[in-house]
Length: 447
Image (cartoon, rainbow, N blue to C red):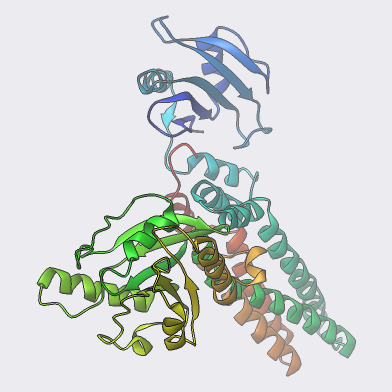
């Protein structure tokens, strides 16, 4: 059994750094380093001494005795001062004592292999670390709590009951399968197919919640696109200038709106241009608009510049018309809004920051209307989960068809077994090492 070691806190200077160990040599290493046996689940203030007897740091050590630990093995956490030199010196000493550098995700993989968590919970650890919005954090926490695993196990139990009933008649073929038992089997399977379909449906929302909703800011030159980006970020991120064509390539930043992770992209002004570099930026802007989740189309209320392109062909359905510069005395935003009567229109002034709250509310409304449904706040499945669920659903549909057509019981039973195998892949009842390697390779070191 490998005894692994890694820094579990981010690299770089910090107040505290936490070094983790897990494996069979943990207790011996701890006793050698601290010259005493550590009481489990108790924080000990200790002097860390290397093999030469030199004190490397004044630290706090906590020992977790197997199986009552994250990995299910003996574990040790050493909280040191967050000096990278001290941390690396301690890790090097621990390696000299027999520990091995941990691979990406190895701590969590040990937890999975030792039955502390199922595979869907292991994947949620990575989602939790990467979460950058309230909704993403909430979804990750729900998956980490084992909710997805519970639903998969509930479906598996129903299918196992149906399979047991089928097996009974396979073992005693002289007995005919009564109609009431056949209906029980069909009902159990169809109940599972409904739950599978509902979970599969959430897969399309997973990237939007975890990776962020792509919002593109577009419009004519000098409409105030870069100013709008700065307004939504509450930061002077983009260069603002009266010179047309200042933004030639897109600028992307991340933020959060109403608990949703959002990827904001400021694009080049849309117009005809003989400048090759600007023309490339304009082509990229059009491509961004066509592929975005939400478009914020900025219009200068004093100079709309709407004749250079066909907005009906350019703008997607999920567009908000941002009528900018409404602070000027001659502004008449109703003239602009009448031209975009099929879109949501919001009056703003980037200069005075008026309308910012209304714009955020409009974005939130559009997200909830077009992108995130109520079920997405419950459980979100990944593409991997959805693929396994779809396989299970297909086999369940075949099983129902076989049962309704009074096919041989062996055929129905075989389909149920295949559905169970597909569900097992989600929670980790699989021997496919390649799948496990691929999942845990995406983790950071120390997790």
